[in-house]
Amino acid sequence: MDASVSRSMILQLLVAPRESSNAVWLRVPTFVQMSTYLIIACILTLLILITTRSRKRVKLSGIHHPLRLPPIVGIPSSEIFTRPQEAYESALRDHGPVVGVWRKGRLEYIVGPEFTKDLFSDDQEFSFEDGVATVLNLPSIFRGSRFFKDVHLMISGGVIPKMEEIVDKIFPIFQRQAKEFVRQSETSGQPVDLFEHSHRCISEAMLIVALGQHHVNEQNIKLTEEVAHAIAIMTGIYQNTSPFARTFPVCWRIITWGRLVCEVILAKYCRIILPIIWKEVRSRRYKPLDNASPEQTDEEDSRDDPLLHYIARIYADGQGKVSFLGVVWLSILILAFIFASVHQTASVAVWVMFELSTRPEYLPAIREELAAVADSVDNTGAHRLSYESLRRASTLDSFVREVLRFKGDTLSLTRETTRDVPLGEFVIPKGHLVIPLTTLTHQSQSIYGDTATVFDAHRWTEGPPASMVSLNYLPFGVGRWACPGRILAIIEIKMIISTLVAIATPELEGGKYKVVDPLNITSVPPVGRLHCKQL
Ligand code: HEM
Image 1 (spheres, rainbow, N blue to C red):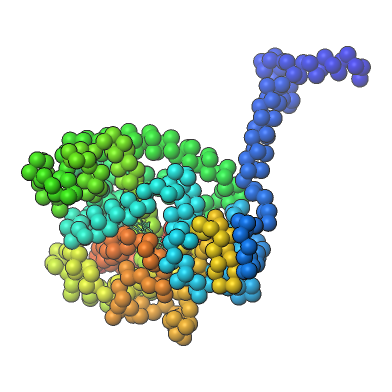
Image 2: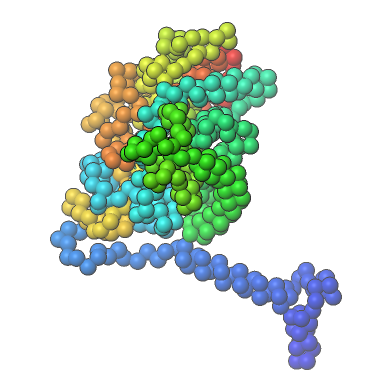
């Protein structure tokens, strides 16, 4: 081929407009296309380089330590994501009691149960806030801010002391939805989605708790569900189930956060819920917390108030008003409340119901107990349950506690070192996640005896209740940062189970369910085809 021909062909390929030659367009990229591909390739390469953090040697921060770094154990990703319990247990058995393991581009330190106490009693060196911010992909503005303390205060002060009133308000939702759920299952003859049911019930209930009954409507319930789901995705709850997200975590985070912040948080939450919060809060004058001049405010009895007003009162100035920035901060706290209160509880409720369906021998005792503790029973067999009667349902409580102990959480709790921290004969370098392997505690023979690996739902009938934490029982963490919503969570799970088993028998197709993410058992609900047969 002569030079002038080849030059003109190249020129034609580079400058030929799209319309001039469809055939060439299909086969050979134009100059514009080639440049676009080049730019995309550069961006992807850059993201991959950032994402796949180089596994450089970990260094201590300049201080001389007589202790040594823990051994780094290579566990293939396939093992971590499919059989984490066996993989981590064998790493600790062979190299323990502290091992470093790379996961999703990050070096984490996994520790045995002998270090649980150190980890959860020293918040100065093992930071809950930094650990959670890292694990949940939260932007760095959340580190060191008042965020976690305010969320904790909001729940422990604004929700838990009002449990009796809250249960009276939300129990009818669970009962109504349970009847509808069973009716659907019966009339369609098809399996029903229990996670959808639990998520929906809890979203409606939490909307009442957060903003009050008068803001409950179909649009706001759907929005609450959507927000809880979007934040669950953003915080990486489903990250393990996507190969792309596991391999390129930073890249995945940028794309997911960008999309969901725009589509859900800005376009929906800020458009619909923020104006409600603004109107509610700005139209009130709050009683100052020190009670200095209560007669000048327009507040009645605050006990019946939704959570929003409880937390707004803390942010009110001397005149009882909340500033513009205060309202923005309250909206962020309510967003956090929706996420914390909906997703995980809905997921654990599925665990409990699926376990009960595979162990129907426990049903008669649970039903008998419900009939005994109920305040009343209607003509469909449905019970009216108060907070007190739900608390007294100890057979159900024991079942829930045993499911929480037994379901196989592995890396469910985390702390981050704020400096180089000695642990046993090792030192954990600053800025690293330290994670106890929870199964080693929950299935320990030295704690639970010979039946440690046996499911026994009568184990806790004499107590302690499912919400009580200890170093031997970690589903809700332990210590200063133990889950502040655990009493509400257990009561809600009991409401979901009791309203369904009072009127129907749950049956899993094939008597089995599937664990979707063995590494994130608490937050990712198992999958199964559930039928509810009306009694
Ligand atoms: C079955 C359902 C739930 C489970 C298994 C669960 C579990 C946990 C765990 C393991 C932690 C971390 C504790 C630690 O690292 O020491 C935690 C923290 C937290 N949970 Fe829950 N939780 C549940 C339901 C709830 C509910 C219903 C709420 C809200 C009403 C809530 C609010 C929080 C908050 C705000 C934190 C952050 C820690 C703090 O502020 O002290 N959780 N939860």
